[in-house]
Amino acid sequence: QIISSLGRKEEIREFLENIRTDPQFAFDSPDELLDGYRKILEKDIEPKLPSIVLHVPKLKIQIKPSLEDEGTAAFYIAGSHDGSRPGICYINVTDYKSQPKFEMVALALHEGNPGHHLQSTHLLEMEGLPAFRRYLEDRQYGIMPSRFTFYTAYIEGWGLYSERLGDDLHLYDDPYMKFGMLSMDALRASRLVVDTGLHAFGWAPEKAVNFMLAHTAASKRTCE
Image (tube, rainbow, N blue to C red; front, top):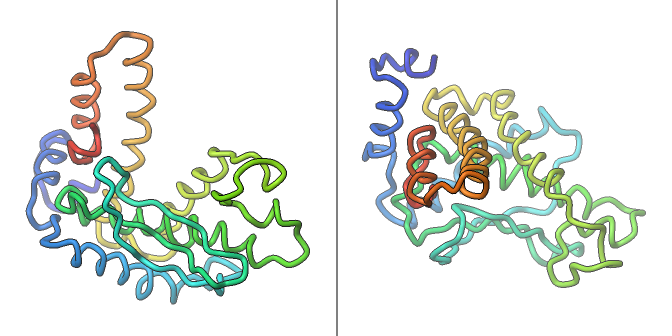
């Protein structure tokens, strides 16, 4: 449906390859990449948050570069309970050209607001809860009784739900941005397939990478 709405005639796999290599979706510099995320979080998302959440975090979020060669496209570190350290969303700029613009909105929603930043900051700003309940992402003292066990299904489940809230915020009016969210969904589903293929059916790593390339618009670096 998205391909048709764009007036394009490709089959899905041809479209995936074409959009993956289309220069209009590539960044020219690390600064352009970082500024793009700052705009989405500060200008496009933040003013609209009160329309979908009752409690807008007081603690701000910052965008900073990550230089991890093997790191993910982005990750979030929660701020401090006293407000002295903001929540930080780290964007991997090592291979900035492999980060497509059409995935930016979904990734910003996932890692920032209303995703992990709101998720963790909401607890930090709740009075009356014991410390091990408030510090959702306590990496320095990440063992009991510092906090409860870290449940990835809850943490990442909220991130995925937040990506879908882009529809309510009218952030997916651009079909390419909506496609980026769906491609990220497809990547997670593909991981389930290749995990089974690698560990139960003896797939070679190359086969796993090719499967993800055939079913998502993710870069080869991401698939590897």
